[in-house]
Length: 332
Image 1 (cartoon, rainbow, N blue to C red):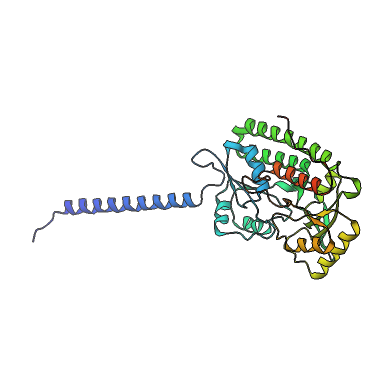
Image 2 (cartoon, one colour):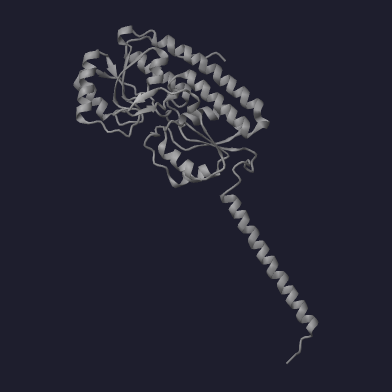
């Protein structure tokens, strides 16, 4: 049997140890890399140089895209036509929230399912309740329970305040893009001011006795108070989680008969069956076009942005209630 000199044994052991050390080090590096990819630093921009911004509602996503444009990578969780009140989060939603550098959400409990998992993810992203920059209307849910109305975007002036909040959050996230964010927000705010004035003019064409709005759920208080049209009745309250009883439906039928409105309105995010029944039993017309309430429309629709949604709603209301509609033509 060949005898191996001790110097060769030591060299072999050292070489083996060095190889083992190299393997362990390489494996550990791979582990760290995989952890980094799965759970990146929330405050560090992505490899493409753009911070990852996550928005919950379609309305906030639309406004954020107009302010951030090409300087951000935006992910909107809710899709057009989705009801945020009853949305049940999916597993990938948690991943989006965990990986975000900034989370923009409405607040005032508009999107309770998403708010719950957002607070539970433990991510380091700044969370900004964009809608809560607006002082809310306080509504009675019944049995003495007073809650803030989350549908703050119903008034275009409030949307301007939301745009400013988005701008400030993006500037804090990416200070080097401050000038671009500011310019984009200024242009959008200018158009929102024009939209606000236009809506007031449009509603004013409706005969005063017909300026009454009956809808499926109580999502138009800010619109009504901002533009001089009374919310005369709703089938359910501010949350679509509510299930109206037969007695509730009948009470609304009787109310519609008394107030004498020429039409009532369905909404894009809610099944129109019950409000259709109300219209039939009350003997009034159901407006041929539905209102956008909690979501913008699908791409290519007449309401596929916040501004177009507000224009479409105003047209629907004005035409159904006897006013004279004139298209919105913003001045650049």
